Amino acid sequence: MTTITGPGELVSLLPTLLGFQPRESVVTVLLRERGAVGAILRLDVWDLLGDVAAESAHELARIAMREGARRAVVVGYAEDEDEGCLAVATAAVALEETVAAVETWIVADGRYYCPSCEDPRCCPPGGRTVPSARPGAASAWAVAPDPGASRAPARERRLASRAARRWEDRAVKGLDAWRDASARHWRAALDAGADGPAPLGRLAAALGDVRVRDALLLMLVPGSSRAVRDALAGRDSPAIAQALGAAMRPSRPPDPRRVDLVTDLLVAVLEHAPERLCAAPAATLGVIAWWEDDPDVARAWCAIALDHDPGYRLALLVLALMDAAEPRR
Image 1: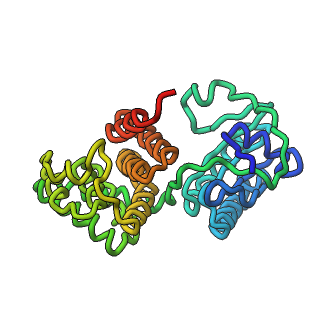
Image 2: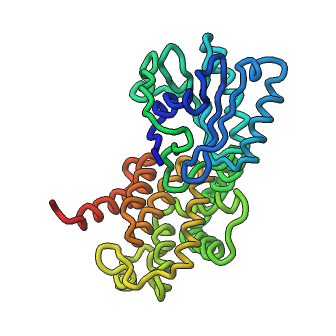
């Protein structure tokens, strides 16, 4: 299978995927797990601007939900770019209620750009030239996925963000007690799961504290109860050194079932967390992938963490440790 590596290549391939050159159209590409291209839907621009705009947008979102799409890319083609941007925005707002992540692009006069992007390095004035399409069968393409996390619907993210803020506000009543309670939340989630945006928001807020984050990693190492307590207390103790061993590697193999549980929880937290709290779960996933000897996935998670916080120390440390461990050529 050939991988589509960016929006420019996707835009260049849309005429091939559709079988015709779209005009005065809004084209939505639905993406499933692991970036597989799902349904490709086309609407006339005026379907999203006229009297039936709300109905058309709702139907688009309903189809995306029925398809189980994780991501959607909405591309507008219109002679009047303002109309194209408005039609694309109407589709995107509706899709955000049922799809985890939505990208928007406009194609005009052989160039493409993101209408909401203000970074000239990404979308220079006038946009970028649509590249030439690579040859290949339409069924043999997939969009490059991230390591597994997308974004939850906007409504769920708002609920999670409010819950995260409320949990952070409780820390002023006593930080030590708050850290202990945060660790208990994570233990309970590992035992019973976390159902809904509010619990995931609290877990995200808890993980934003470095001591709680380190305690969570230590919870994965068998026989590390003392090390967990020391991490929460901020003590650099022999128990922690014994649990992690050399170079942050666990001295005893983590319980695979518990690793799977915490990985699923961290991905869910990352999908729901406000942007300011995304670095911690992504970097923690990077540590776990590194422990499982999957450096490519570990680097991908660390890259996501650094996208959210370029100075996030755990992600930088994991990358440095992996670089040091690789044999020199």
